[in-house]
Image (cartoon, rainbow, N blue to C red; front, top):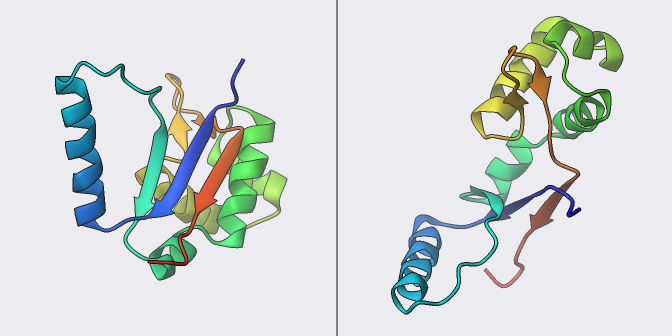
Length: 121
């Protein structure tokens, strides 16, 4: 079974739009669709680093390992203040790195978070 991964990178609106156009042209030409990938793009490195802080990455790891849980339990596991964990969860949920189960518990379904930063851009 393949690991569930999410790719994180930096792309401007033009690059993202071009990616969509290329996929559209491939579909029109009858090319087989690539395996869907979960991707999260930031407009610049500063925004990426401001959003994915070391504490939020640690939170994702603990959440992934603990399985479906609540903010309260997660704050106890991390030994952090409930309010701060709640704020971090809201941010990570908003960008799609934290999801909720049908019973509203939190999950981080990713085995890996893969970041790509181009030095040429």
